Length: 314
Ligand code: CP
Ligand code: NVA
Image (cartoon, rainbow, N blue to C red; front, top):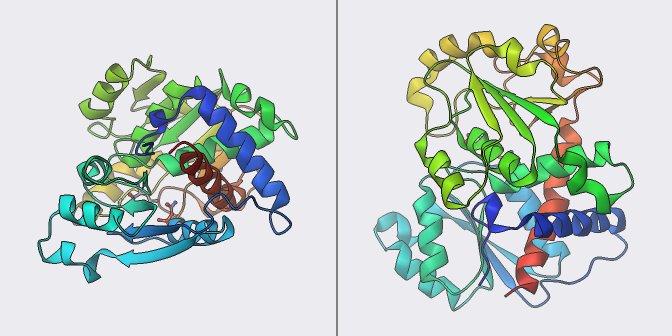
């Protein structure tokens, strides 16, 4: 049984294959889509808010010929104390797979262990792997235009800079995806917001050589970068720290001055939702360097490719 809980649940070769499938699904959308999930029902279980992930998975399962079953955690017996183990066992009798957005990453691992269906991480406090595969695919479209077979290779040796709360799920996922795909990841944020021991331990376990660095110097991180990215300063669940975070992260806002230090032609990305005036200036979101809406669209194509890949490797 294959799961996609973290980027490294796919090998480099599988990522390259997922990219090729995603490119084909994107090119053929609305004309022909292989019914990879025909006669299947997939549960989409959300413990946290979502716009892109919820809609793109629902549409994606439908377009692959399957039926999405939307599950709100608050409506389930899980929220009244039923165990995750029992829930996973029961739902495995109805469903062919599950996509889960949750707080504690361990919940995903419980579903994967106790259930008998593929589980996909739609964001946990620890990682956001569907977003990272999408980010890498979106960059590769620019760096190897029209050559999906070269997408994965086009990423190797590139430098990306991530500014702000680099200890969050997106920071961790950049660290992991960078190591998997040979991308240099320069992180910059205030002291205390560097990726923690958990992601470093995961790299060791997966035998992946680290490709990341952390500095408190935003300019140093951005210099020579092929792409600059950021994420909200207050991730879901961190609302109590809002005031302190906004104050401490202010020097890490991605603005036109900072973008001018990156490589000529450098791109800007943001997983969204954005908070203009906080982690990113409106001028950057609106600039020609910004590819945020291609990035958002590609969630659909890449996730369809991931689902098709998991369904084929059962
Ligand atoms: N980027 C992302 O995961 O967006 P949502 O929270 O809207 O799903
Ligand atoms: N780090 C953000 C990502 C949102 C897609 C959060 O967890 O809220």
